[in-house]
Amino acid sequence: KDNLTMLDLARKLGQEITRDPIPSDASAKADWASSARTKLKEVVRYKPVAVQQPWPVAMTKHHGLQSVSYLFQMNNGLSANGIWLRSVLQSSDTAPVTIVLNDGGKEAGASAVFQRFSRGEQVLALDLMFMGPAWKNEYPFLFAQMVDGVGDRPLGMQAAQLIGIARWAKERTGVS
Image (tube, rainbow, N blue to C red):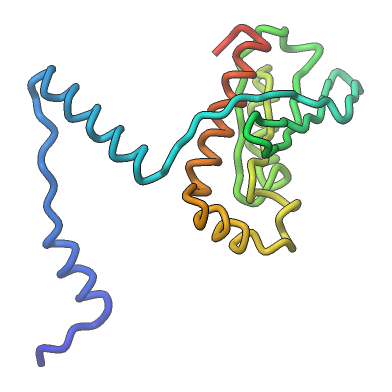
């Protein structure tokens, strides 16, 4: 009668988790947020990177759609790829920019890209490392284990790529 199902065990263990409340005092809240960020950086092992060279690979302009395919070479030697889309008729070079990520790759995020493009925004459909069809048959978990073995975390590396590319996009357009 004391046996627990997996679900009951998970519920029991979950009820035992306690967290300190977020302080209401402004200075204590700032200290708490700072320590939370520090702990997150330690867990994720985030190391900032920047776009060393955005290589335009292909460019098209057809029926009001302008697209530029990029290979983003990062300053840590790794790369990401993306397609920058904008409407020549509806948007300007200073239109808002949206970055669309999807674990399945750029193609899987096509509906989100289309929605933002239809609003007149510039869109960057982006594949970071370990994302998209380029990694489909390459056993990305083995590469992730190797990255982890040298002291980095794949999530921290992806976050660094995303932040670096977002900063590049902001510099390129002058908008947030």
